[in-house]
Length: 110
Image (cartoon, rainbow, N blue to C red; front, side):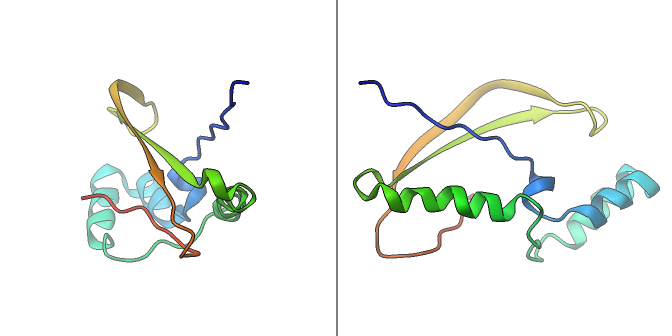
């Protein structure tokens, strides 16, 4: 029997509350937006509307302890105006086993 996958795409603006930076972009333009992002890059983002949904989805793993893995996929998109995005060729995918010893995990990029 073939296993099926659930694939969910969630924007960063839905996962985290980026209302302030988006408002700066709309009102003051790209340069002000970029400055705001750089000035605030070390601050922890507040959860957005989709954050509780992601937590609940990740909790599904607890029902399948023998299959405790997470699959990550990263792709790159480009834009000339921050409104319309085009996906570039290439994608990174990785399947990572999740140990049963911790309750919380976070993604970190090097």
